[in-house]
Image (cartoon, rainbow, N blue to C red; front, side, top):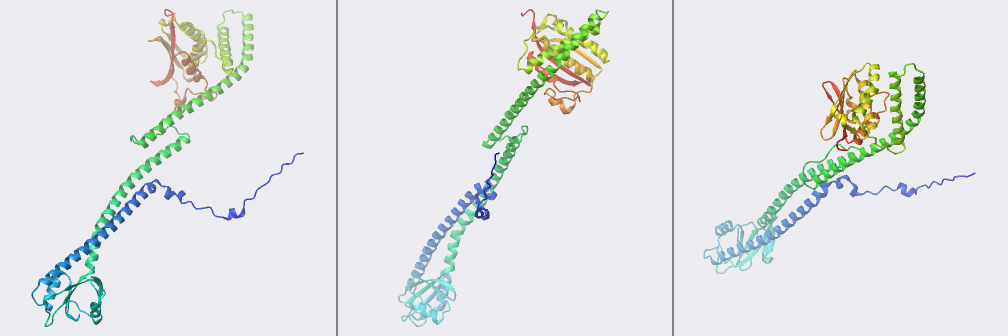
Length: 478
């Protein structure tokens, strides 16, 4: 006795309780091609814009400082070259013209005149504050400069120094103006660049999505739909390659199905042939015994029965060869001999089925041969039998065609081929008959290809028309 022991490994509880790690790279938002293309572009553009803005701010600060120094020098020259007394109205006028605040100091650093209101604390700061320096007064920031005066007088007192105060808001405004223009320009450029990039990436993602769906449909077995958008770029070429791959896969799939069908057909043929061979042998012996005992030696029914059994035995022999993977040797025969054989065997069956058949053969076929008479007889017989089952009026015509070809046209007044199987009519196991196997027309097509021709069908004037072409051997050519 053999015992089987199964060991079930319980996973580590710590691992089971530990939450799975969060991978940001697997987030669909970060995996989007739009974000991967648009993100770096916008980030680089923003960094560049802010770098340019900071550089412009720094340059603006230098330009504003130089401009402030230049304005002070102008004020300094004006004050030193003036010969008028620095009275209150004069200082206010100068302050308005130079957009500054002026404070006149005496020999003892006392305030003689001022265009701005000063508190005691402000006066004390003015005495100790060096220049140039920043100065805060009444919650406003100023840039303080000093200039020495020679020979200037205030209101009764001599002014030895003049303090010039520049409003720091003007300096800050100059800095902001210097940085604002490149920043606005950069942001507007980023907006335009981002919009164009977003539109292009959306279009690109849409085309890639269509290509992805097409590949998925091909993987699912749909080889008919196309994805080519007639754009000659790399994606268009890739779409064309996918369509080409789908067409090749479609052909390969059809070839595989055809090979599988032929393989199954060989197996079925071999099985059917083994079962029919003994039955046909017994039927032939019984009919020959009956013919020997029949008082009418030239009985048509007996002749037709023996001929049909001979055809059936020929078919069985071919089926046995097909089942074993072999092929019968071709047997060339005269066209009209084959034609008369088919006519003599099928005319009694047509009379029995009350089917009217019109036979018409081109006299020029008398000197021509078929490379394999049994294959031609089997194929034409199959077409005529199908026509007799479909309608009650059948016409069969054999015509000589150019380029050493002949055509057998079989026409019937039946309802025609159903639309559901019209496209696959010559495929194995496709039939509209409840009792049919769908092997007759594939055999007809195989015979047409073997004889160097083809078989096709169409509807014309409410009739079904089958055309069977085969290459003939001209007797003169041999």
